[in-house]
Image (cartoon, rainbow, N blue to C red; front, side, top):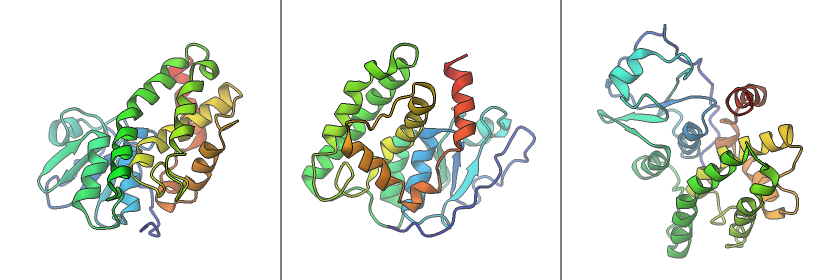
Length: 234
C-alpha cells in the first residue's frame, strides 16, 4: 500500500484566508482535521499514494471562509473534492471516486464475495454511527453493546487478514475514523473499553494503527475531546 510519503498538515483556512485559484487544474481535497467524514477521504488519498496528486486543503468549520460556499461547494461542508473542473462531495461517494479514478493500489477487492460483503458493511456504517451517537445521552455502554458485537462478528467473515475483507479496504475506511473517536470517548467519559471481550475488534484497531496512510490522519486527542464535550455534554 502506497503510504510512505510524509503528509505535512497545512494550517486550516479561516474567514480571513484569501481565496484559492479555483479550477486551475489542481486537484484539491477540502477537509477539516476534526471531521471523521473528511478523514475517510484523506485516508483514501494517502493509501492510494496520492499526496502529490491531491492537495490537502483544511477548512476551519467554526470560522470558515465565505468563498468556500460561494465558489467551491454550495453545501458548505466537508469533505469535497475539486477535480477536473467539478466539485464532488459526500464521504462514502468520495472514497469510491478516489479509489476508482486515480492511480495507486485498489482499495476494494475484485473477489465477488468480498465485494458483496464490503458493500453490506459500507451500507451499515450510518446505522452504526447514528446508534452510537444517540446513545451518548443515555446509557452508552449498554445501548451500544449489540452494535460493537455486530462489528466483532463481521470481522470473522474472512480469515486472510484482520480487516473486514481480510486486507485493509474501503470497508475499513468507512468505519475507522469513527471508531477512533468512539474509542476515545468511551475510554475518557464512560470508563469503558469497547474492545473488552471483542478480540477481533481489538486486533482490527491495533492493525489499523500500523497503516501509515491512516496514522497520518489521526485526530488530535485533546482537541477532539474538548469539541466532544461542547457538542454532546454541554
